[in-house]
Image (tube, rainbow, N blue to C red; front, top):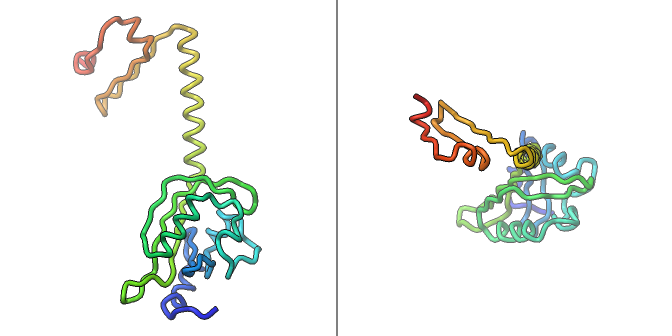
Length: 177
């Protein structure tokens, strides 16, 4: 595969990038990927160079395939957290930036995808929601009121049971005094 000189110069920087990053041609074929990308996508030790993203990641979400197509057309795109099933079968939550590589005449000749693995953040959110739901059930069953006052942020929070027990709204400034 013969590459445009600009893409040729970007090869080493992509391979050596300290973050998950991959370089693609306009046909959505892998030109290069960093070790971080290989790890997150489960591609280490596989022959993926020169193959299209859809061939390498068989369960590529349709929305992601569309982002690749749009970026190959020249759009710069940011994606919120999305689940990806890697070749290894593991689900990773990624935030991705799709950035076209443009010639001097502003025509796209390829594109980068930079991935930020937010799997630990998503797992922490899921755990926090589960803890909050368990606390809500326990407080409801116990008919106990709970309040929280943050004197730095000057905020307050009362559980619904707390409001019922007090029977009135509590003003933070009055309470803080």
